[in-house]
Amino acid sequence: MSPQTKMKMRRWQRKPFVTYGLLGLTIFMFLLQTLRGGSQNPFVLYELGAKVNELIVLGEWWRLITPVFLHIGIEHILLNGIIIYFLGIQVEAIIGHWRYFLLYMLSAIAGNAASFAFNQSISAGASTALFGLFGATLVLPKFFPNNYQVKEMSKSFLLLIIINLVVGLFSNGIDMAGHVGGLVGGYLIMYTLSAPNSWISGVKIQAKYGVIYTILLSIILIIGWRTTTMLYFN
Image (cartoon, rainbow, N blue to C red; front, top):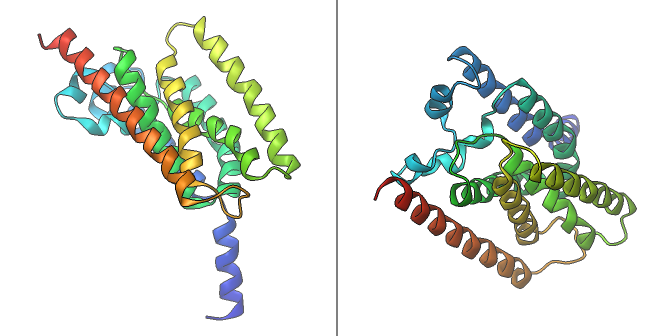
């Protein structure tokens, strides 16, 4: 391999291509929703994989993942798309591509599981994953205690987390369970994944938080299954 080719590969590897890919897929799904009848059409949401508790109980467990790529209304996707782009680029640059992808998806699963347990309404959106990224920013200063930029980023997003949670308490139509679930999931997963060249690392530390995530996720899924079963199938 020539030096020029190696340089091009390194440049590509530094690009936030996971963020670009997730954002691209999200936009594609919104266009598909629009073409099939509208992003606010409940039948379109059902068809394309929104979180519907009864269908999850009936075996459609992929609905704990697919809602992260669907949005309800143009304002919804615009706001989340902007956050995916700007926050995603920062987090991906710090923790790397595969860690970022796992953080995004596992946060989404935690958020959708919490919504399944505590919110009976149909829901969709990337907010579950985005709150997971917010949660990750609270962990990063512990990995890089001497990095001023990471500390400032964490402070900024802590304020944003508080504002969003307070607003959510007084707003209709916001899936607070999904937001909190994603936030807690992202916090735990960030510890589990660690980060390249971090000050805190170790298999024992990572395993501990991974176990906590798995236990909490299992408990939440059991609650969701039992609640939905009692409401709709008894």
